[in-house]
Image 1 (cartoon, rainbow, N blue to C red):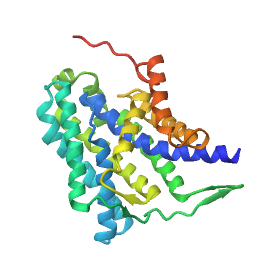
Image 2: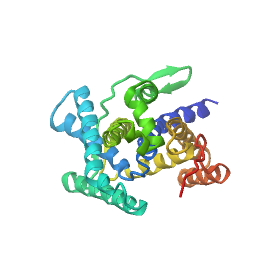
Image 3: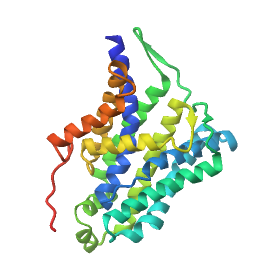
Image 4: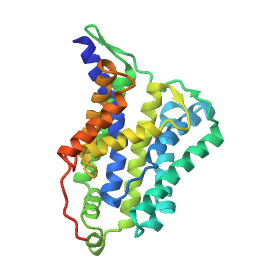
Length: 292
């Protein structure tokens, strides 16, 4: 029983990181109707920004974390303005290819600047472990769960209780009608990219504090899994992204512990296929009728 509880806690910790990343995917898709495949590499940029702040600039941990979040938010806005805004009316395939190109651009820039050699990184989270009975929960896991919970609550309140959040929901429903009502659609889309990228930075910080190693491709696999989490929960649905991330983390943790480490990724994608066969819109997604 203790082993099962440990795996569930590990799954919640990993799933929380996936959920933070998936929120970026689902917000961008819900509002801009595009899949930002460069989103996973923003995690990598956030991780390297933290490393530069702590190790090279000797900033305090709090200042380095803030720097990482700001860098990723600005990067998200810049990528949207430069790469995606000119393609608003382009075919979806053109936007998809551009997103993949931006992803490779970010990876190769990191490769040129920091080289391919993994860089060891000491966690900036210095929270002691907690023992409950015979179960020990690491400080990083505790902080990951708390930060994710707070982020999700704040994001939900922002979307549902603020004027900017109402504008985001309006743009998500109908861009044309929102523009006629005086909403600045371009600004709302930029805000969406900024928020999603800031959440990716937080996920990147938590990720490297857990695994304590930096490399240019560190955001690739978590980014793909977070996309799977967004689709699993219902892409475009914020609570669905949260649920999908947690479910994905739990499935992956249990599969690694009780089935096979090598097959865990295959099992995760297999579960996605089964869910989409049963409910194509995802766990919390809704089918939408679109005029053609």
